[in-house]
Length: 280
Image (cartoon, rainbow, N blue to C red; front, top):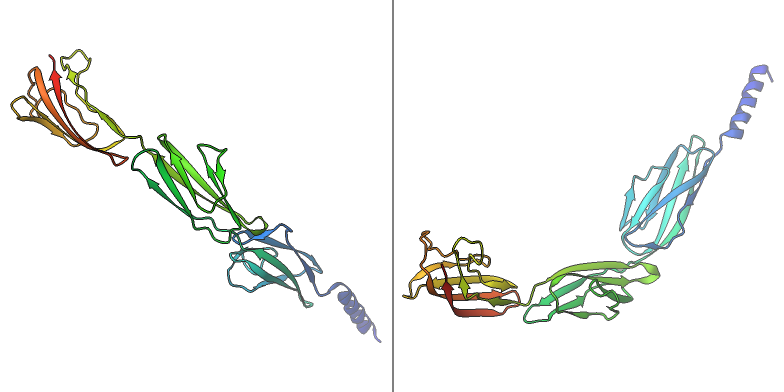
């Protein structure tokens, strides 16, 4: 064998010794996997692969980041079940393939409807549970953390106005839980009080007539003089009378008559008639 062939043969042996088919092992977290959550797979490789090709079966209900040709990949499984993850690695020498199986638990989905009855006090919040894939439930109320119930549906009474929240926890298999929340505003129990005297004389004391309203959603007010002539009217809850006509004329001291029609947030209707003394 001449020197050239010997050199070529030795070079071929050296290349064969170092250029080998790549291999890979799929590495994934061991935590419980719930549907709707993401899992990132990485690789441990040998023999320097230059290309990666991932696949998943079944491929339905699976979202992928960043793409199927990256050294690592993130799958989001939107449904429960068993999935086979495959990875093919290659270089100039050849290819190899490895697989890993993951089991995804279908998560519970929390959902409920809240219906508020506002006729009278206390207001009653009726909670109807529409959760799916849950094995148990828990209702939590922010106004009293010590009160919780594990019933399917719930009813909560509110006797004090304010802002409240309700949270439903739906417990699924293997800790695959979900929550849903609802915010509710409870209005005051309605009421109206009519002042009987006011004195619009410029001393900044008791200068206006204004119905004292609590929990009122709408109001109409008419004010008449002693001859039955309407002096002023308004249809807003926070309006008032400063002792002048609608044209700006100063009204005389004396007795006037007030009619108020209103509706409360609690559904209560009001129709009040009262005398009002204007003092100068």
